[in-house]
Length: 347
Image 1 (tube, one colour):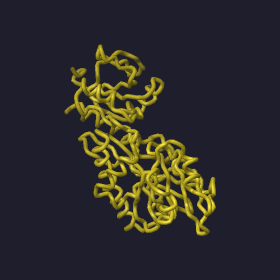
Image 2 (cartoon, one colour):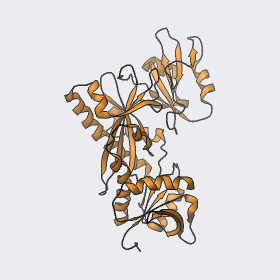
Image 3 (tube, one colour):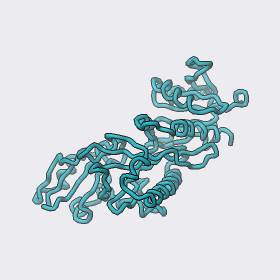
């Protein structure tokens, strides 16, 4: 039974200490008639079909025992579906979104490669199925990434230089290791990478902003009608002499960056592509990952100003937007997940 005919929406978080902070911000940016509470997977009492959750009641934080929500926004960072599947057995199928939000990059690459987004995806291979020396002969530059990775952790840049040395870099463009032409690059990398699963991606020679690397992050979210929409487009500008945009010097609205590089006509063309490709990428990801309500798509522009999809993120970091001066989209980025949960609760 809906509380006073108002749906109950749950936000599932990893730890109890995160409940208040996360709930506070999502509570602030919606104006729908609903009951919102935050809980962790261990707060679910399956036998009693009750959940111990935290909510804001008449301006006071209160921990209470709740009935199961009508829809759940998953803010845990997970690869497995067990808790979501159990929840949906009780509340109904497709009532939880962002089911799997820790994306397997290799699965997603294959999915996008088989779609009409293929032209936007760099050639990618499983590390243990290729010879790096051969790929370097072909591309001159490759990136080696963990299949499950985030924030640019353990992403290696490997470049074949004009004098046939191979430079291996981590975060910074300055090489951490130099492999001379008579040394085995494969041995060196095997030693560096250990047992983790990695993939190798064709390196894109990026269009730079005053000698600095930058990427374009598109936040795609579903709205109150269940439709994918673009909420915001930003650029992350890396520190000088760094390639890892996750450790960025600045984050700016895309409208601040593109005019420094392109004509108004070219900007319109790039923006139109960003909109179309990002929505299509979100639709494709949903085929692989199950019900999603938001994700971000990271692009780079090459020296010919063509767009390439570098990564999809299933749990977009929203705290990155706090550094943007006069950021106008806060209501959208925090309001839309609650609106989409409301939409699910009504169906």
